[in-house]
Each structure stands twice: as structure tokens, then as C-alpha cells.
Image 1 (cartoon, rainbow, N blue to C red):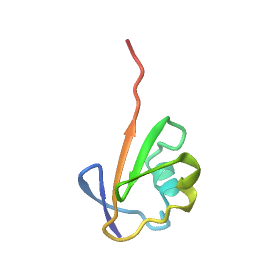
Image 2: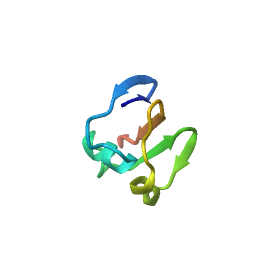
Image 3: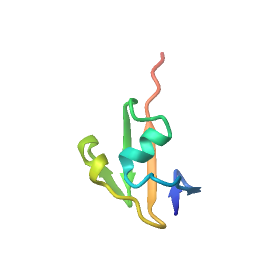
Image 4: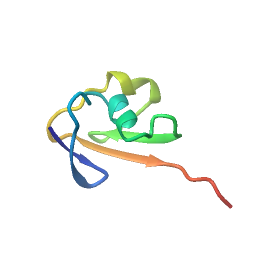
Length: 67
């Protein structure tokens, strides 16, 4: 299945069916981040129930500390 991830086409690995799976696959599961799925900003608790579909649009923003 293909999705749009941060503005680029992305082929989703087999077994990655939810936003939570995608974040784990990308090794982002433990970071503080914001996920937008099809133009809806998700709460962290929604990640396991948010199912990915063909052509979905996902934007992931993670924060970098510094000063």
C-alpha cells in the first residue's frame, strides 16, 4: 500500500496497518511528536486505532531540543 508521508510517496511495509505501527516501524514511537492523518491532528491515544488506507496522507512533526 502507498501513502503520502510528509509530502512524499511512501510504500508501507507489510504488517503496518495503523499509525502506531507506522511510528514503530519508523522508530519514532518514543519521541514527542504530532501526527496528522488525512488532515486530522491525532491524539497519542488515537494512534493504535487509526488505520492506514491506500492513498492516505500522513504528516509527522517531531520536536528537536536545543538552545
